[in-house]
Length: 539
Image 1: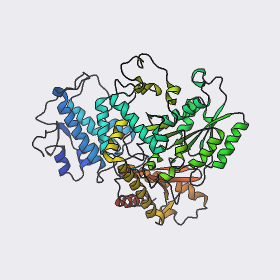
Image 2 (image 1 turned 90 degrees about the horizontal axis):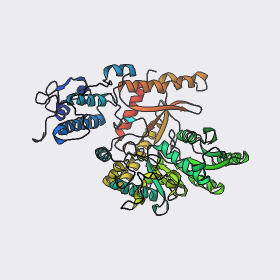
Image 3 (image 1 turned 30 degrees about the vertical axis):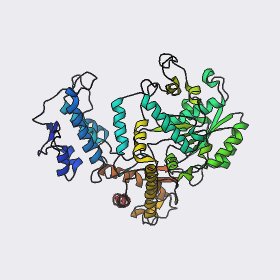
Image 4 (image 1 turned 60 degrees about the horizontal axis):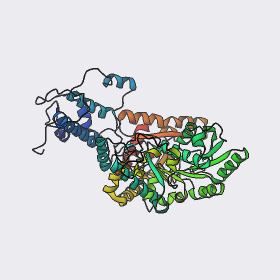
């Protein structure tokens, strides 16, 4: 250990000199740390937390350093170590008993707070762990994490240039570059960072409605004709949810059929548009999906764009999941036609592995967000400021105060370069294809899709007890439906990995593994397969 490194304020039984030493001497670091008793080191006081919202070197330097060392060692390095568990699962009632959730009137000591940090880490799911492949986000990017930390240290809000000069220009730079990648002319247009993909879809619906019926902003929906938007039956649920939230109504989201791969049926889309017209409704928008949540399907964007032009409809592409493929020369063909869209939702926290949350809405039409959402609050957006107030971009957002979501992504981009993102995308697609081929002809595994388009691999594990059962037997599907939930329960209670499952249409529950972590290797694919076999062999 370097000579100038301080001892942490918390020490453990068996007297390892520091958290780093504890890691070096432990064969099962995370579990050992969480089982041993945390106590105050003899050479530190029971320093009590201060009430002032102010960070001082005198009062807080030791606490900051000890907290960061604990977070790095146990939250980051142990939390992403393949030798350790993905989670330490406890039932809700049991977790309430063993974790100190209660709030109290008196302050805590710094050692008590450090123990709370340790407990939070111990009982939380380690989403940066290589064996967490449960959602459309995973991994823990080192540069994104540092950007996230600096974001919180500066604690800014991106609404005016005066309080957020660096981040205002940073957002402008990143959004323009993303619009260029989408294919909008010279990256011109509009855009914003928004609090998640659901809200991004809501922004797009609102812009589309305004473009169709500008008076909606001031007159409201009371005198409005019935508007209808169209999306595939496998689109993200936020389309229906935000249509309801905006007063359009979920019944006015017409679900378009999909083919066996999950791609929108353009013939049925035309029929649904014509149906809306025959009902004297006003079709105003199509929301296509580039990378559906379950099957990873990419809708035929060029053909949808043709229909949108024919019927004068706003063309939105929800590329929250699949948008990252635009960074790869090898895979951007999956989104051919996206350059013809009016708006694109793209979440870098998904396929590009930026820390949560990092969602962007990119729009072809310059200035439309301010037209739709602006109210020009005089106490914040004064026009007689001494600088160019066009950089006070907050009025185009629905929010007032708004977290900085750009720094972590910008810092990752600076670190890796566009070429680094391309290598990342190519690697996760390579991993998905390798895993697919590993299980394609393996006994006990059956694919939902033989040739998925994105990095989602959907499959059933069929335990030995069902392998000789006639699939036409009415009980077969019923029994198979119970397999994935039982394996999921066992893997979570063991903490060995996390993979999600779901039913869809006529299909009984199947596993969906998503590859988004470019740190995974071929040996990890073998681990996933063998774990599923081990957990399911006796079902």
